[in-house]
Length: 304
Image (cartoon, rainbow, N blue to C red; front, side):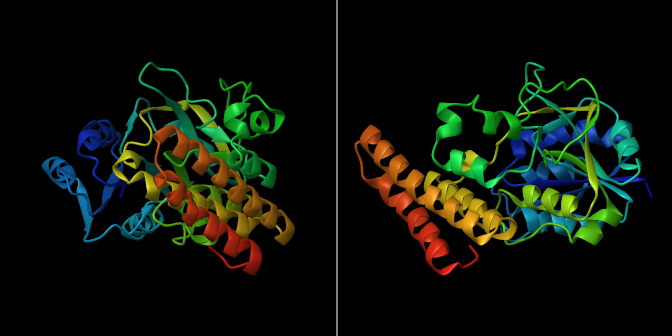
Protein backbone atom coordinates (compact mmCIF):
# COMPACT_ATOMS: atom_id res chain seq x y z
CA UNK A 1 0.00 0.00 0.00
CA UNK A 2 1.28 3.44 -0.90
CA UNK A 3 1.52 5.96 1.97
CA UNK A 4 -0.65 8.46 0.05
CA UNK A 5 -4.10 8.00 -1.41
CA UNK A 6 -5.79 10.49 -3.73
CA UNK A 7 -9.55 11.13 -3.89
CA UNK A 8 -10.93 12.89 -6.96
CA UNK A 9 -14.66 13.67 -7.14
CA UNK A 10 -16.02 14.18 -10.65
CA UNK A 11 -19.22 15.53 -12.13
CA UNK A 12 -19.26 15.97 -15.90
CA UNK A 13 -15.48 16.37 -15.82
CA UNK A 14 -14.52 14.66 -19.09
CA UNK A 15 -12.52 17.65 -20.33
CA UNK A 16 -10.52 17.98 -17.11
CA UNK A 17 -10.05 14.51 -15.61
CA UNK A 18 -7.54 13.22 -18.19
CA UNK A 19 -4.75 15.76 -17.50
CA UNK A 20 -5.47 15.50 -13.77
CA UNK A 21 -5.01 11.73 -13.73
CA UNK A 22 -2.03 11.81 -16.08
CA UNK A 23 -0.21 14.08 -13.64
CA UNK A 24 -1.33 12.21 -10.50
CA UNK A 25 -0.54 8.66 -11.61
CA UNK A 26 3.28 9.05 -11.65
CA UNK A 27 3.26 9.97 -7.94
CA UNK A 28 2.66 6.32 -7.11
CA UNK A 29 -0.30 7.21 -4.89
CA UNK A 30 -3.38 5.02 -4.75
CA UNK A 31 -6.06 6.91 -6.70
CA UNK A 32 -9.82 6.55 -6.55
CA UNK A 33 -12.27 8.59 -8.60
CA UNK A 34 -15.79 9.02 -7.24
CA UNK A 35 -18.10 10.00 -10.08
CA UNK A 36 -21.39 11.65 -9.20
CA UNK A 37 -23.53 10.44 -12.11
CA UNK A 38 -21.77 12.30 -14.90
CA UNK A 39 -23.64 12.48 -18.19
CA UNK A 40 -20.55 12.99 -20.34
CA UNK A 41 -17.49 10.80 -21.02
CA UNK A 42 -15.90 11.24 -17.58
CA UNK A 43 -16.12 7.57 -16.65
CA UNK A 44 -14.69 6.45 -19.98
CA UNK A 45 -11.67 8.74 -19.47
CA UNK A 46 -11.05 7.22 -16.03
CA UNK A 47 -11.47 3.62 -17.17
CA UNK A 48 -9.19 4.20 -20.15
CA UNK A 49 -6.39 4.95 -17.68
CA UNK A 50 -7.11 1.90 -15.48
CA UNK A 51 -7.80 4.08 -12.47
CA UNK A 52 -10.13 2.80 -9.77
CA UNK A 53 -13.62 4.22 -10.28
CA UNK A 54 -16.68 4.31 -8.03
CA UNK A 55 -19.61 5.25 -10.26
CA UNK A 56 -22.57 6.61 -8.32
CA UNK A 57 -26.00 6.14 -9.87
CA UNK A 58 -27.02 9.60 -8.65
CA UNK A 59 -25.32 12.83 -7.67
CA UNK A 60 -24.68 12.27 -3.98
CA UNK A 61 -22.99 15.61 -3.52
CA UNK A 62 -19.34 16.47 -2.98
CA UNK A 63 -19.19 15.76 0.76
CA UNK A 64 -20.76 12.32 0.44
CA UNK A 65 -18.45 11.41 -2.44
CA UNK A 66 -15.35 12.43 -0.48
CA UNK A 67 -16.52 10.31 2.46
CA UNK A 68 -16.97 7.42 0.02
CA UNK A 69 -13.40 7.90 -1.11
CA UNK A 70 -12.05 7.76 2.44
CA UNK A 71 -14.00 4.55 3.04
CA UNK A 72 -12.51 3.03 -0.11
CA UNK A 73 -8.90 3.85 0.79
CA UNK A 74 -6.80 2.90 3.81
CA UNK A 75 -3.70 5.06 3.24
CA UNK A 76 -2.44 7.11 6.22
CA UNK A 77 -2.35 10.30 4.12
CA UNK A 78 -5.21 11.27 1.82
CA UNK A 79 -5.07 14.04 -0.78
CA UNK A 80 -8.31 15.68 -1.88
CA UNK A 81 -7.73 16.79 -5.45
CA UNK A 82 -10.17 18.52 -7.77
CA UNK A 83 -10.43 17.11 -11.30
CA UNK A 84 -9.48 20.53 -12.68
CA UNK A 85 -6.22 20.53 -10.72
CA UNK A 86 -3.02 19.25 -12.37
CA UNK A 87 -0.10 18.41 -10.11
CA UNK A 88 3.10 20.31 -10.90
CA UNK A 89 5.22 19.03 -8.01
CA UNK A 90 5.91 16.07 -5.76
CA UNK A 91 3.45 15.38 -2.95
CA UNK A 92 6.27 14.95 -0.47
CA UNK A 93 6.22 18.59 0.81
CA UNK A 94 2.56 18.18 1.78
CA UNK A 95 3.19 14.82 3.41
CA UNK A 96 6.11 16.23 5.40
CA UNK A 97 3.92 19.05 6.71
CA UNK A 98 1.35 16.48 7.80
CA UNK A 99 4.00 14.98 10.09
CA UNK A 100 4.71 18.20 11.98
CA UNK A 101 3.67 18.17 15.66
CA UNK A 102 -0.05 18.79 15.99
CA UNK A 103 -0.60 18.86 12.24
CA UNK A 104 -3.85 17.67 10.70
CA UNK A 105 -2.87 18.29 7.10
CA UNK A 106 -1.64 20.73 4.49
CA UNK A 107 -2.74 22.52 1.37
CA UNK A 108 -0.53 23.52 -1.52
CA UNK A 109 -0.10 26.44 -3.86
CA UNK A 110 -2.70 26.67 -6.63
CA UNK A 111 -1.74 28.58 -9.76
CA UNK A 112 -3.83 29.63 -12.74
CA UNK A 113 -3.10 28.86 -16.40
CA UNK A 114 -0.57 31.70 -16.46
CA UNK A 115 1.27 30.42 -13.38
CA UNK A 116 -0.07 33.11 -11.06
CA UNK A 117 -0.88 32.01 -7.49
CA UNK A 118 -4.61 32.04 -6.74
CA UNK A 119 -4.28 34.41 -3.80
CA UNK A 120 -7.51 34.90 -1.92
CA UNK A 121 -8.62 31.35 -2.70
CA UNK A 122 -5.84 28.87 -1.93
CA UNK A 123 -5.44 29.96 1.71
CA UNK A 124 -7.90 31.85 3.90
CA UNK A 125 -8.93 32.40 7.47
CA UNK A 126 -12.20 30.84 8.57
CA UNK A 127 -15.15 33.13 7.80
CA UNK A 128 -16.51 35.25 10.64
CA UNK A 129 -20.07 36.61 10.83
CA UNK A 130 -18.71 39.93 9.53
CA UNK A 131 -17.20 38.19 6.49
CA UNK A 132 -20.47 36.48 5.59
CA UNK A 133 -22.46 39.67 6.16
CA UNK A 134 -20.19 41.68 3.84
CA UNK A 135 -20.25 38.86 1.30
CA UNK A 136 -24.05 38.67 1.38
CA UNK A 137 -24.44 42.44 1.02
CA UNK A 138 -22.02 42.56 -1.97
CA UNK A 139 -19.65 44.82 -0.03
CA UNK A 140 -16.67 42.49 -0.47
CA UNK A 141 -17.19 42.68 -4.23
CA UNK A 142 -17.70 46.45 -4.28
CA UNK A 143 -14.83 47.14 -1.83
CA UNK A 144 -12.50 44.12 -2.02
CA UNK A 145 -9.75 45.83 -0.06
CA UNK A 146 -11.85 46.43 3.02
CA UNK A 147 -10.05 45.34 6.23
CA UNK A 148 -12.42 42.41 6.92
CA UNK A 149 -11.98 40.95 3.46
CA UNK A 150 -8.20 41.49 3.43
CA UNK A 151 -7.88 39.62 6.71
CA UNK A 152 -10.19 36.82 5.57
CA UNK A 153 -8.51 36.25 2.20
CA UNK A 154 -4.98 36.81 3.55
CA UNK A 155 -4.34 39.55 1.00
CA UNK A 156 -0.84 40.94 1.26
CA UNK A 157 0.50 37.78 2.90
CA UNK A 158 3.94 36.40 1.95
CA UNK A 159 3.19 33.10 0.20
CA UNK A 160 6.79 32.12 -0.46
CA UNK A 161 7.19 30.30 2.86
CA UNK A 162 5.21 27.67 4.75
CA UNK A 163 2.83 28.88 7.45
CA UNK A 164 -0.14 27.67 9.54
CA UNK A 165 -3.47 28.52 7.94
CA UNK A 166 -7.03 28.02 9.09
CA UNK A 167 -8.51 27.15 5.71
CA UNK A 168 -6.41 25.72 2.89
CA UNK A 169 -8.38 25.19 -0.31
CA UNK A 170 -10.16 21.84 -0.44
CA UNK A 171 -9.19 21.60 -4.13
CA UNK A 172 -5.67 20.51 -3.12
CA UNK A 173 -5.66 19.40 0.50
CA UNK A 174 -3.83 16.51 2.15
CA UNK A 175 -5.22 15.20 5.44
CA UNK A 176 -3.98 12.66 7.94
CA UNK A 177 -6.43 9.76 8.05
CA UNK A 178 -6.37 9.60 11.85
CA UNK A 179 -7.42 13.24 12.14
CA UNK A 180 -10.11 12.78 9.49
CA UNK A 181 -11.60 9.91 11.47
CA UNK A 182 -11.38 11.79 14.76
CA UNK A 183 -13.06 14.91 13.32
CA UNK A 184 -15.74 12.86 11.56
CA UNK A 185 -15.17 13.58 7.87
CA UNK A 186 -17.28 15.91 5.78
CA UNK A 187 -20.78 16.92 6.85
CA UNK A 188 -23.04 15.57 4.10
CA UNK A 189 -25.69 18.12 5.01
CA UNK A 190 -23.75 20.57 2.83
CA UNK A 191 -25.42 19.29 -0.31
CA UNK A 192 -24.62 19.20 -3.15
CA UNK A 193 -21.60 21.45 -2.55
CA UNK A 194 -20.06 24.55 -0.95
CA UNK A 195 -18.80 25.15 2.60
CA UNK A 196 -18.24 21.45 3.39
CA UNK A 197 -14.46 21.96 3.38
CA UNK A 198 -14.79 25.21 5.37
CA UNK A 199 -16.85 23.39 7.99
CA UNK A 200 -14.28 20.58 8.09
CA UNK A 201 -11.41 23.03 8.61
CA UNK A 202 -13.38 24.74 11.37
CA UNK A 203 -13.87 21.43 13.18
CA UNK A 204 -10.16 20.71 12.80
CA UNK A 205 -9.35 23.99 14.52
CA UNK A 206 -11.89 23.27 17.26
CA UNK A 207 -10.14 19.94 17.83
CA UNK A 208 -6.84 21.73 18.47
CA UNK A 209 -5.16 20.61 15.24
CA UNK A 210 -3.13 22.74 12.82
CA UNK A 211 -3.31 23.00 9.03
CA UNK A 212 -0.47 24.37 6.89
CA UNK A 213 -0.01 26.17 3.60
CA UNK A 214 2.96 24.64 1.76
CA UNK A 215 4.16 26.59 -1.30
CA UNK A 216 6.49 23.79 -2.43
CA UNK A 217 3.45 21.65 -3.27
CA UNK A 218 1.97 23.10 -6.46
CA UNK A 219 -0.91 22.39 -8.82
CA UNK A 220 -2.38 24.24 -11.78
CA UNK A 221 -6.05 24.89 -11.13
CA UNK A 222 -8.85 26.03 -13.42
CA UNK A 223 -11.55 26.42 -10.77
CA UNK A 224 -15.31 25.93 -10.79
CA UNK A 225 -15.39 23.74 -13.89
CA UNK A 226 -18.60 21.92 -12.94
CA UNK A 227 -20.48 24.91 -11.49
CA UNK A 228 -21.62 26.37 -14.86
CA UNK A 229 -23.33 23.04 -15.53
CA UNK A 230 -25.77 23.78 -12.72
CA UNK A 231 -28.74 26.03 -13.47
CA UNK A 232 -28.08 29.58 -12.25
CA UNK A 233 -31.15 29.46 -10.00
CA UNK A 234 -29.92 26.31 -8.28
CA UNK A 235 -26.40 27.67 -7.89
CA UNK A 236 -27.76 30.65 -5.97
CA UNK A 237 -29.92 28.53 -3.73
CA UNK A 238 -27.28 25.89 -2.98
CA UNK A 239 -24.60 28.48 -2.16
CA UNK A 240 -26.78 30.45 0.22
CA UNK A 241 -28.21 27.32 1.84
CA UNK A 242 -24.70 26.05 2.56
CA UNK A 243 -23.65 29.49 3.84
CA UNK A 244 -26.61 29.53 6.24
CA UNK A 245 -25.87 25.98 7.39
CA UNK A 246 -22.29 26.96 8.19
CA UNK A 247 -23.50 30.03 10.07
CA UNK A 248 -26.00 27.95 12.05
CA UNK A 249 -23.33 25.43 13.06
CA UNK A 250 -20.50 27.77 13.98
CA UNK A 251 -21.94 31.09 15.17
CA UNK A 252 -24.03 32.01 18.17
CA UNK A 253 -27.74 32.65 17.79
CA UNK A 254 -27.44 36.44 17.60
CA UNK A 255 -24.62 36.37 15.06
CA UNK A 256 -26.46 33.77 12.99
CA UNK A 257 -29.53 36.00 13.03
CA UNK A 258 -27.50 38.91 11.67
CA UNK A 259 -26.16 36.69 8.88
CA UNK A 260 -29.71 35.57 8.02
CA UNK A 261 -30.87 39.19 7.87
CA UNK A 262 -27.91 40.13 5.65
CA UNK A 263 -28.70 37.25 3.29
CA UNK A 264 -32.31 38.44 3.04
CA UNK A 265 -31.34 42.08 2.40
CA UNK A 266 -28.58 41.16 -0.03
CA UNK A 267 -30.85 38.78 -1.94
CA UNK A 268 -33.52 41.48 -2.28
CA UNK A 269 -30.93 43.91 -3.65
CA UNK A 270 -29.42 41.33 -6.00
CA UNK A 271 -32.85 40.22 -7.17
CA UNK A 272 -33.92 43.76 -8.00
CA UNK A 273 -30.63 44.63 -9.67
CA UNK A 274 -30.43 41.49 -11.80
CA UNK A 275 -34.10 41.72 -12.76
CA UNK A 276 -33.58 45.28 -13.98
CA UNK A 277 -30.46 44.32 -15.94
CA UNK A 278 -32.13 41.31 -17.54
CA UNK A 279 -35.49 42.97 -18.04
CA UNK A 280 -37.16 40.00 -16.37
CA UNK A 281 -38.58 39.09 -12.97
CA UNK A 282 -37.01 35.64 -13.15
CA UNK A 283 -33.90 36.55 -11.09
CA UNK A 284 -36.03 38.09 -8.34
CA UNK A 285 -38.21 34.98 -8.23
CA UNK A 286 -35.05 32.87 -7.93
CA UNK A 287 -33.75 34.94 -5.03
CA UNK A 288 -37.19 34.61 -3.46
CA UNK A 289 -36.34 31.01 -2.48
CA UNK A 290 -33.22 32.24 -0.72
CA UNK A 291 -35.13 35.02 1.06
CA UNK A 292 -37.74 32.56 2.32
CA UNK A 293 -35.10 30.12 3.54
CA UNK A 294 -33.14 32.84 5.37
CA UNK A 295 -36.40 34.14 6.84
CA UNK A 296 -37.30 30.71 8.24
CA UNK A 297 -33.82 30.39 9.72
CA UNK A 298 -34.10 33.83 11.29
CA UNK A 299 -37.59 33.43 12.74
CA UNK A 300 -37.65 29.78 13.77
CA UNK A 301 -33.95 29.03 14.14
CA UNK A 302 -34.17 25.88 11.99
CA UNK A 303 -31.04 24.31 10.54
CA UNK A 304 -30.84 24.83 6.74
